[in-house]
Image (cartoon, rainbow, N blue to C red; front, side, top):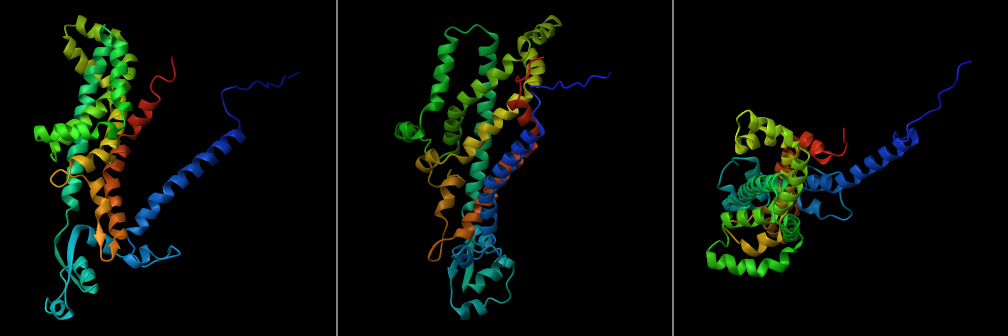
Length: 317
């Protein structure tokens, strides 16, 4: 007689559980994507279509929002516009259809470049300093290590508004107000606490025996760190870099208070995009769409390391 094996894993989910989980994940993904899709659609609407009620799903696409984003315009008479001759570009033609002419470039591109410089510069510094500090806490006996780690983490818990005024007064005295260097140093100071805590957990999972074997072979401590530990901690560094970059890229409060012109980033600039008669919503949506691209590309490029970093150490062999 053949016996029927009815044993099953208590860990493996059943078919119904998988279907329910998949439905929840798909529904969550769709709901979270709706605002992004709507912003992308609005960037291709005309100003009247962007504020129409009920909102328009079907509309005639136009690049007017992107043209308004990257240019400044002035209203002119029909005679003056006719004397200019044939439009030289799509933006020029679109602008003239509104009885305006392009007066020059807008300030969005300099603000966007400031965001790139400040966000990626502070992320690089925070991850670099955080890696060294995390290695020290992980590999050496540091007096009052737990107290120091809690103090480092407490700086991340502090709301920005609580220290905004003291930082503003300090920056004004040091001449760092409205400078890219000042913003990079500030975002580095805020992000380094997160980097230390995340990277310490990753480095703790790397066996000490790897470094000891390298030092027996003649490597110094620093050589073992750069050639043995860092390659093993790549996933943790990538995951930490993404989290630090997201904060620096989206930060608004410090950017509003400490910058006004030269070092102003995109987040405080985008809400100030004004068109004729009020907010230029297609231009705002276009600016937001472009603003999302670098962080999206950076995350996609590091997605494998991010997934491995999040689950690193979850399963013990």
